[in-house]
Amino acid sequence: MKKLFTLWAVCILSMLTAVAQDAIFVENQEIVSPEVNADGTVTFRLVAPKAITAQVWGDFLPEGTLVDMTEENGVWTYTSEPLNAELYAYFFVVNGQTVLDPQNTYLYRNIANYYNYFIVSREKGDVGDLYSVHEVPHGDVDEVWYDSPTLGMQRRMLVYTPAGYDKGSKYPVLYLFHGAGGDEEAWIEFGRAAQIMDNLIAEGKAKPMIVVMPNGNLNAQAVAGKWSKGMYKPSFMQHTNPVPTASMEQSFPDIQKYVESHYKVLKNRQNRAVAGLSMGGGHAYAVSKEYPGNFDYIGLFSPAILYGISSNFMETNLQSLRADQKLSRQIDALKAAKPKLYWIGIGDADFLYSQNKDYRTYLDEKQFPYEYYENDGGHIWVNWRKYLTIFAQKIFK
Image (tube, rainbow, N blue to C red; front, top):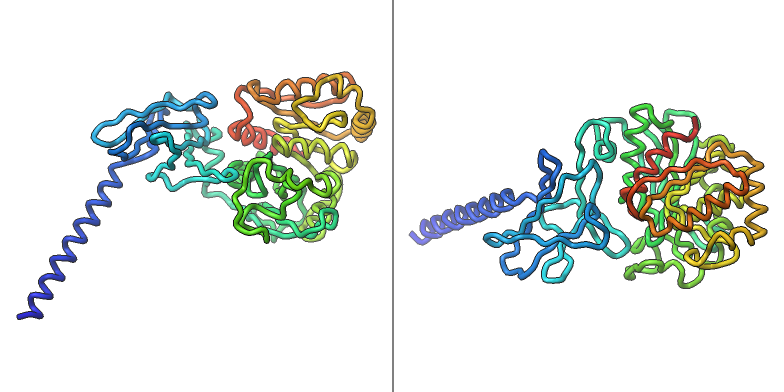
């Protein structure tokens, strides 16, 4: 009798547990966030019955703003205006504290912070579609370590190889730098570089190429948590302390040497490109003028450019450019090398817009040929993904 009662109790407990699990499953299924609606609006939902305030931050909103969510039965909701096709980042702010969306498993890290993200696509071929994963041949992303005698350490970088790399012959190579606060994983995580290259190559819009993404923080071996410094908390511009022993242009040959000895690359200027965003745009600017015959394609995405007169790019101006004799000689040498493309892209609301305008005026005075692209928006990944997409279709043609 006792055994029968025990068996009955176990059955009842199992049934109750199953019902509870089903209830949780159904509850979670009812809360969809974010929900991309047919009209292009996006609805965000957060279950927080004890919250006093709840807000949304997103890079689809005016920079630096938060919007209030409305509450009903413990569920906070906000619906955006119709959004253009794009990949967007967001998070919630509950009672003044940043909170990730528990209903959205898609997130990425920026320095020490995490963001949820979602993709809006309105039609085949728009940027949201380009940044998505499709049934096309996929390339690989290698995590590699290389020796940098110039910096006195081993360093980590990511290398994208196109689909069919093992069966192909030799490929052109794009060296692609991240911005301040980023690391060697930034272009893969935020920039969707692998998806962009996979889709452009599959559509025949870009030539199959290798993309090399080094760590631009010259006193660091790798992204936080993946080198011997341990599990420290990363912070913005941490790479400036202590001061690196060499610059990117001084240490770049270590990167190129490794790539050209370990990958099937074409070893001539016609098949080399260099590009970068923000600080990485400054790296591309510096490396290209340091080695004027090394690249036929140079891309500066919202570049933070250091001139010789000042160590602070925010304090430079047209007069300091004109006064820099070393820069003048380098730009003259780069002009004489006749690269096929010197491409500059920036948003009209970018905080580096004035600096870049001065640099373009300087290039005009030097009669240095370049291609300029300006769009709306600020110093954000929404623009840099677009710039990579445009630049990748122009190189190695």
